[in-house]
Structures are given as C-alpha cells and as structure tokens.
Image (tube, helix red, strand yellow):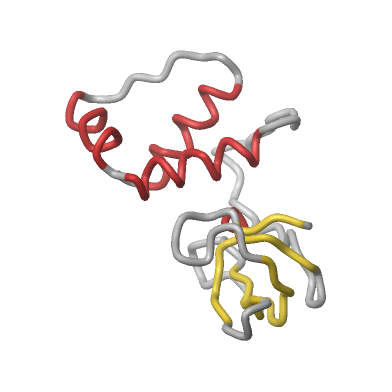
Length: 122
C-alpha cells in the first residue's frame, strides 16, 4: 500500500474517525506485516499529540525532528526494530520529497539510514 494511505488510516484511527479502505487494501493490510508495522509507527506519532496538518494550498515544508548526537530507538519495522543508537548525520530533504533522513550508529556497531517516523527519542 502507499505510505500516504497508511498515514491517513493511522490519522483517522487516532482521532476516532472512520476511514474507508478498498477491499484489495484491506486484504493487503491483513497479509502484509510491513504495512501493519508502518501503520503502528504512524499511530505512535499521533499518540498524545493534537493533530494539525498543513494547509494543502500552502507549499509543504520539512521539519527536522532530531539532531546529531541524539540518542534514539528504532521503532520502524525491520531487522533493527527495538534497537537503540545515536544520530550521526542528518540528510536534508531532496527536492520535492520534504522528508529528512537520519543516519544512525546502532549500539551493535552497524549503521543505517532511517526516516524520522522510523525512530524516536530515548
């Protein structure tokens, strides 16, 4: 499924609104652990926050959520889920995608590149 649909589903569920999924999307979500994990990650971002979305008529802007040296935990799906590390580099958004990426040195000595929604402060 497209990440935007997963985001909208998570947002709707977080405020108690119904969200229409097509039959094929429902089937896919039931069978795809990765997409369910992305929904969980998005849901954690909404938890305990008031949701203010930008005006769709205004140009989008990127917001840097972490700084070099920040201790983080990986909350996104994948092999590194649950591991902790430190932000070592910030990758500026590319033209048109408005998404920061963060290079993380994981405690086991490996490194990885993560989207902001895949990590959270420890």
